[in-house]
Image 1 (cartoon, one colour):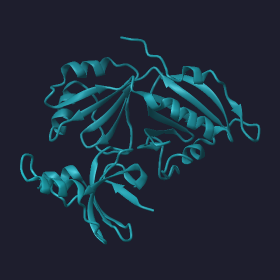
Image 2 (cartoon, one colour; image 1 turned 90 degrees about the horizontal axis):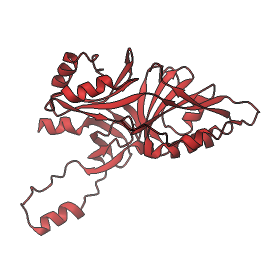
Image 3 (tube, chains in turn purple, cyan; image 1 turned 30 degrees about the vertical axis):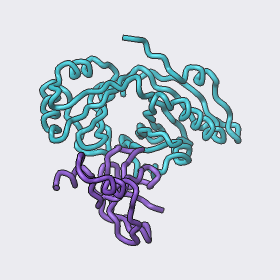
Image 4 (spheres, chains in turn green, cyan; image 1 turned 45 degrees about the vertical axis):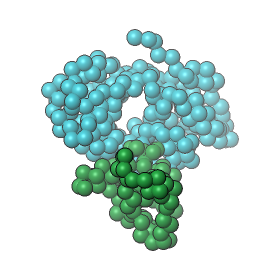
Length: 90
Length: 202
């Protein structure tokens, strides 16, 4: 069972969250890149085994977006931060 | 100001039922006569929002996301960084903040018509809620005055422990009937009474 520690709300069952995709992927800038680049961004995904950084949204809680480190093989959660804090540090 | 009508009006007339042992160990009620708004800062304006509210003689906003803070006829909680819920028995102060708050510091959204406040009370209240909410509601973990934004019946609700055996649910109005029907179904084994309360104090 996956329990996610929301920085705002505390430990919650994963069913309160919505998966939001790979947090390592960078969206191509608007107006840049060709069709193939956009196709790959929208439709082609890695399927890594092991450590993974991913976006989750606490839809049934504070509704904030989080960046969660999760082991995809064991479902073990790691460090979780507010996505807004990650963006602020870029 | 339009008069508020409850979407639960007909459901509240249905009356209670005895549980399997013939007792009624729950009371389900709608709490009326209160107002609600959300205060939200923009990125980097939380301090400015707090300063402006202080200048408007609004009590200090909470710093963490655990407890409701009560101040006279008002109650505040912090939903997320820079986002607060404000419940009160009158909306006079809310309307004043809405008029006078600098829009660069934050915004006020009136939610009085967007939420229903339901009360679940009685010896079986904790067990009833535990059947639908994936939270530890033991008093050592979820104490009186504490709140949690969570889901019930796949619907986002805000749960507050008002007393040892009394909880309040802030439910989106459009989903209130679904939540009410879930509560009634889950309460059948325990037996329940139905009521309407008016908020004299929050």
